[in-house]
Image 1 (cartoon, protein in one colour):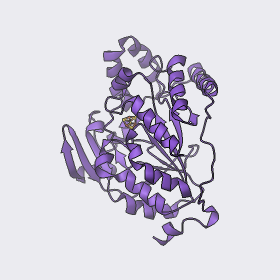
Image 2 (tube, rainbow, N blue to C red; image 1 turned 120 degrees about the horizontal axis):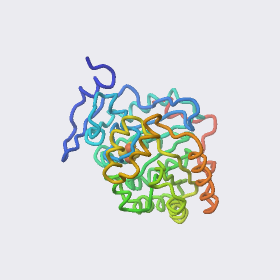
Image 3 (tube, rainbow, N blue to C red; image 1 turned 90 degrees about the vertical axis):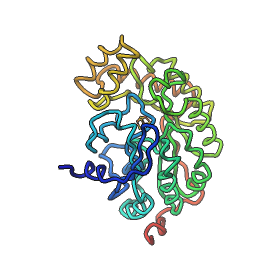
Length: 320
Ligand code: SF4
């Protein structure tokens, strides 16, 4: 018998069907998820489950397994848009202290193609723009975010806002292989430029760093240089982790495209989803060195929004 999220998924009404991609509306009880201690943000929002960008390394594939899907392609072909996002958010925000930061797009991309149709992320940002005094971040690899530039500008006047754009490589062919349906790296960097020019705090992350594929000093340096040139102010990067749900896609991908790497990846990741030991340290040093070379910070600089609310914020949320 199906229970929990698998039951909700089975009951979801089909919104639309396009090529092989199907869109559903997922009944949701809440929008905000409390994160585990030690994370850089207290709450996470993911307006969509599944992601059409279909990155070969995507760690979020396991979330579709919770919904009862075992075929890995269903993660990118069955996209669930959460229902009633604005109403849920207004209600959920009553339990969030102003000091607690909220991250949008921690699992799946909030500006994936479904957003163009269903506008869930935009509806969420509109709710945040009604209030003041929040600390928000958005993570995406989509240039669709510039559609919402006027809203982001409005939002950052009374809330702290940081946008993290993921650019794994500047090599367009490699990006197409790794992230078949995501916007090209140059389009993402153009979005970085537009955000930065509008005064939005923006950083670039070459995540996930893939051993022997995107991890060279030269490859990471090119991304950092382009990020700096586009106006990003911070830069960071972490090594890929591959849970069994991601291995199911990534290992066959390696077999086809990087057969010489398959054995080495299997030897390391079949034991544990996370790489341990000196490699992690090497990459940490490499990213730090590159960051310093280009005058980029490791994290967003604190700033005071023009209309920061201090202690008396959030009347709007509490009244709603
Ligand atoms: S954009 Fe992010 S969530 Fe979407 S497939 Fe790629 S890694 Fe996964």
